Image (cartoon, rainbow, N blue to C red; front, top):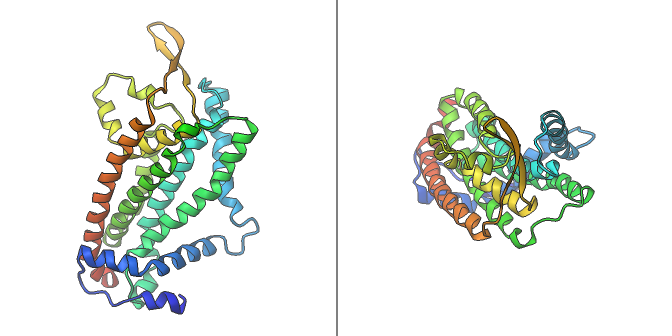
Length: 301
């Protein structure tokens, strides 16, 4: 750590309240930025391609899913690469933040046991690193937009920063909470890996949202409780920006159904604001829980 960053460090009491946690985070913003840079440097240390690896991830997913869902299964979604990337970039950020945040405290055990500083910056640094990767991976989406000459929804583009902000708050809340839980319950990290796998398929990334929303089933109500759904469909509305044609079975016939996307931008914004409000509450609860557990980290590690 640099001298400037160490100046941000303070002794941590056995328990600290929510107010103190918020104050510590604000005072440790330089330390947080340093940890994000350090995590990125360590990940690509001695790598020839460096940050290019972050762009190869969505590119590989694009090729695989395009072959499986567009060529083999015939999803019938026009410009499927744009549709896929507009949701996949959101998921990559969310998954990286949760996966890295869950292991952030245990992965930095040597520092946690020797240096006193607000430990909540560790899982938050994983969220910050995921955000940096998100911007790099967005280059793949921009190239795809140019190659396929696909126009974005300029009238809905304001939804993107709103949706991204909501996603960051949600990811931060879960990362802080899971990072603290994983210190005493090491199975948490393995559970998160499985949960993210199931969560991916419960999010409309490789299939259109109306395909599920139009079904009359009690399970659909549970599907609506997935907060990432509303972030993804906001990105899709702004970037993919077109109606989705899908093949559905009508009795004994298979027909093509055009699913409309004519709802206003405020419909998306309203759902995003609800998810954002819940995410803020979750973040405050996660910080309060983290403050109660923080004093025991050194002994448990």
